[in-house]
Length: 242
Image 1 (cartoon, one colour):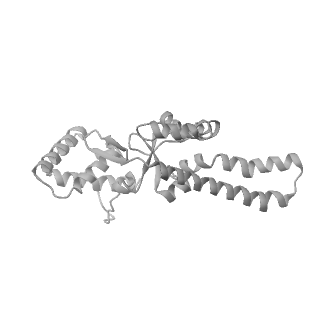
Image 2 (cartoon, rainbow, N blue to C red; image 1 turned 90 degrees about the horizontal axis):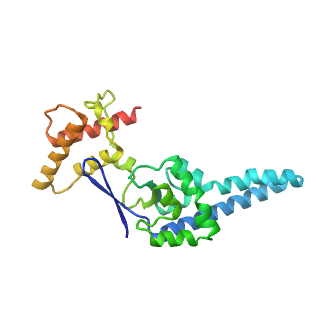
Image 3 (cartoon, rainbow, N blue to C red; image 1 turned 135 degrees about the horizontal axis):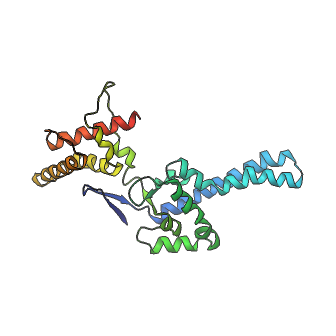
C-alpha cells in the first residue's frame, strides 16, 4: 500500500495512506449509480410530465438533468471537502499533495481531465495511470497536484487538529501561532500524543519547541511540552472564533 509522506517546516513527517484501487472503483460505481437514479427520477417525474415541445423539452432536460449529472463530481468535491457521495461511503477523499485541502482550481483541473481519463479513453487512461503512478494518481490528479487518500488510516487535518477549548473567556497567549500551517499544528498534536516518551523523543520535542520559538520570534520560559500545548490551544481557539 502506497504511503504519502509530507514534511512540515519543523521536520515533522505526516503520513497518509493512498486510497487502494478497489475503494476508488467502488466509489466510482456508487457515484454512477446515484447519477443514474437522479437522471431517471428527474426525467420520469419532472421532465416527462411537463410534456414540453421538442426544443423547450431539450432545454429543460439539459438544465435539470445534463448539467447536474455532468458537474456532479466537481460540485461534490468542491463543497464536500474533496468527497463525492461514493467517496464518503468508501472513506476516501481528494487531498493536495502538500497535505492540505485541495483548492478550487485543483478540483476544476482534475474534473476537466476526467473527460480524457474516463471519457475518451473509456477509463483505460485512469486505470493505467493509477496502476503505474507512485501515488495511484489518475492523469487529472497528476495535473492538479492531488491524491486520493484513505481517511480511515489518517483522519483529516481538521479532525486531527481540533481541540475543544471549554473556557469562554479564554485569551490566547501566542497569537503568532497563526503563522503556522495546518500541517505544522497537526505535527505538534501528533508529537504531544506520542506514547512511551523516551529521552530521544523528549530531545526531539525540545528541538521542535526551540525551532518554533525562532520562527515565531516568541520569548517564553515555558518548557517544551507546555509551550506546544499552549500553541495548540491558542490555534484552536483563534480558528474557532474567526
